[in-house]
Image (cartoon, rainbow, N blue to C red; front, side, top):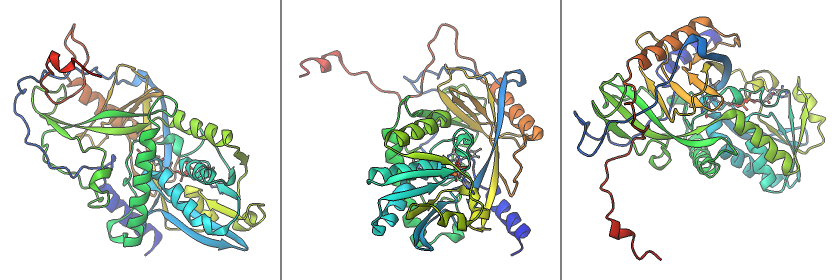
Length: 412
Ligand SMILES: Cc1cc2nc3c(=O)[nH]c(=O)nc-3n(C[C@H](O)[C@H](O)[C@H](O)COP(=O)(O)OP(=O)(O)OC[C@H]3O[C@@H](n4cnc5c(N)ncnc54)[C@H](O)[C@@H]3O)c2cc1C
């Protein structure tokens, strides 16, 4: 297929992909039509979305391949070359697990020194997994945090977003994916806390049809036990403050890239790793490295360095407004203006919107995307019920009967 046709076909397929990527297969519970007894309406802080609150807009290019990420061993002269790139919109989610797959592939080489090319999340997590197995690791990279795609990520645990076309899946690739998703999910859970900027957050989807399913392509890709929204619950009219009939809540893992990426670099250096700033123009330059094992974690860089023309950028633009520490939830909703009305609070700013434009290599901010997303989010928020005066902000929790006082007696 001609490259432009391939991109168009990819764009059509990708257009049907949700931006959050991870959908629950859990059966939808019947929606309530009125607040249930014992369930007071949620009191959520109102996001303040306005042009004069914008603090920055970032652009990143997701390294997508229709055939999914590549984790594979190869030879480069006398060296072992292991590829680990092309994670699309799931690189933050899959990095730890793909790093383990790389370490497994490196083991037969019986060498103790490894070079990792690339310092995004996949490169850093791979370097850490190699260090955990006793390798002496040097990272070589043209750029390091904060100048990586990983730092420009929306950064939820979204292991399938913009990752692979369903018809390109193979049993072998699926096995790699499931292993990587499983390892990463567990690893990220154990890193929750301020040190790594990872936390659980309530994510709401405002909708008039809680039974509707997005057009995602993950189908059976993520096993049930790895799906973050398994505790999905439907809030009916009156139970939530959003301007839609229903709000579907689920717990999601969230990452703050600016904290996470620096913490990964710190851990890598503390374990004896070295970082060398260097751009490689050709495979031949890699042959000159002293390490007998080379791991390619260059993401989109593999388009030219390894001539992988299946790589396609999926451009993503995020706008940030002044952070509000009291916002303790994410919300998304279908916007009527074609924009993305997502609101994702982080300590480095509230992320407003997102975008997925396949085949677009431009790193320039596009005003029309910014305006559309800002307008969509502001319109959504303007229809929200403000929290009642003199009540505390709350979190969604299924109604429960308080335990009797005597149930606490005689503990220990
Ligand atoms: C807007 C947006 C939202 C996203 N949201 C999510 C999300 O919610 N969840 C999720 O899991 N993922 C998300 N992603 C995807 C995720 O950010 C990427 O999959 C991941 O960052 C890719 O990592 P990488 O290492 O391939 O690229 P990078 O982070 O860019 O790292 C590549 C590294 O390779 C180096 N390099 C490249 N070429 C060379 C060369 N020739 N010589 C030397 N060094 C080289 C670079 O300098 C860099 O250090 C999102 C991405 C974007 C843009």
